Image (cartoon, rainbow over all chains, first blue to last red):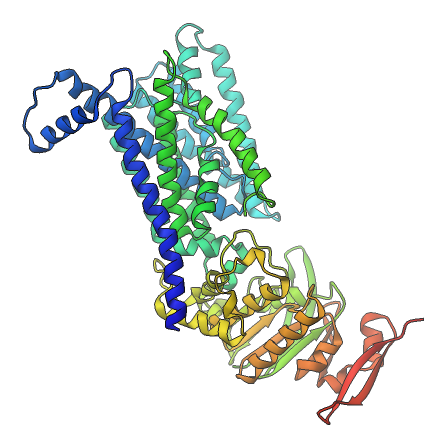
Amino acid sequence: MTNHTHTVHRKQNALNSRIGISLALLVVLVVVSFMVGKFDVSLRDLITVLWARVRGASHDLPPVIDTVIFQIRMPRVAAALVVGAALSAAGATYQSLFRNPLASPDILGVSAGAGLGAVLGIALALPVGAIQMMSFVFGLATVFAVYLISRAVRGHDPILVLVLAGVVIGALAGSCISLLKYLADPYDELPAITFWLLGSLNAVSREEMLVTLIVVVVGIIPLVLLRWRMNIMSLGDEEARALGVHTGRMQMLFIGAATLITAAAVSISGVIGWVGLMIPHIARLLVGPDFSRLLPMSMLLGAAYLLCIDDIARTFAEIEIPLGILTALLGAPFFLWLLARSKRGWR
Amino acid sequence: MTLAVQQLAFGYPDHRVGDDLCLTINPGEVLCFLGPNGCGKTTLFKTMLRLLTAQDGNITIDGEDISRWPQQRIAQTLSYVPQQHDAYFPFTVMEVVLMGRNAYIGLFASPSHRDHDIAWQALENLKIEHLSDAVYTHISGGERQLTLIARALAQQTKLVIMDEPTANLDFGNQVLVLNAIQRLARSGITIIMSSHDPDHAFHVASRVALLKDGRLTGLGKPEEVITQESLRELYGVEVGVVEFDTDAGHAAKLCVPQID
């Protein structure tokens, strides 16, 4: 028995070390993200400024560096980390729960609903904070509507109904968005709407960042606590019940948590597709399907990925490239490669 | 533990499969259900496991009605080896077997060392400990079936329900699984199973239940119940039942279908 415990531990250590390596890479990436941009910051300057801030002392570098690091880059880097981690955590949850490789944070209409809320806010010329609030509330309301529909339609596979209802409500929200775009002022509102729908992190303030962070953490806590139960849920409703799980409650809790996380992320970043679909796949390839490793790995990779994408978005060209465009440009071919590579798509 | 079924009506909300079923399953026996496809074996098993709600009548364990038992208590009493197992994620065999411990693990907890040891014993019991690190989606059908039986063992229940454990297996794997069933039965576990092959009932069952259109048409010892007449009635084909002496010197029976 000691022998088997030994092997099991060695294997788990190997997988855990991959999570460790990803964490180290993420730290490096965060440092690089503070350095690159319109205004270059050298590593030495970055360390000087941070060290001075930690000690509460002053430094003899130009004050603009402080502004760049603390006012401009810090909220943006934090937003990329949180949104990337959030979308990937939600994606991992939906994929495990629905046992579906195409499940993603958009699947229950969250993104479309949140998009509609934001577009409505922009069309009503609300302040930025209110627009984000609108998108958050609309995102949650959409999923609630989807859930009510799936409860009302009986006699079918409940998860299938849930996903189909999500597609329908999402399409409905999409057409409302189109209508608002059609009616919007083409010089002022329409560009803002389009920009928001393509996803961006350049308007995130520290306060909004903090609120989003809190909501995301609240949503992640049940996922972390119930990480082992998620494995059982991924066997499907009947088997999970035969193994003694109250699947109804558990499903509600997981869907609720993942939706909360998604709505919070989308409300500050706009619609950024593909991250929540693609990242959990890669994480599963690296550490296997056990949710207690899949969840942290997805979050680390998602944070690193979106940070990388955002660095490209703000440095590659003179104008900022919307994130949604980049994630789709990179995500679509990657996903095709992934499908071609593994025989069964995701095993 | 004694599982008793009284005047049970079972089926799906819009479609009743069986009616007025009465049956008592005694501790330590291997009860094998035989019947054509669609006769209601799987539906009956799911009702016993309370995956489906009993439409009428009741199911008791040691005299206690299980309809109000919490899910966890059911899982600590009855384990289930499902018929077809669609594997979605590449869990290792060990991870799958550990899932059998679910009913004993706290809501926010993960399997402990003790759970690992119990899962390992289940693998040893079925002689598949060499598979512990293998990926469940990559192993053969027979190995998967043994893994699911190991999971049921790790669940440490007195009753195990197996839905066609030998279906879709090649001959060698069928024998492996039948051996495993025999070993479980000898260790005192009550087994309720179904099979598409009456010979399997001869090999491992202590009693046989014949199920047709959701009704019991026969119940008793395999040698008494599995006859040319009962098989004709059950499956609508001519099958001879022959008796012979095994090498070990005791009498055994086998079914021999009549092919024109």
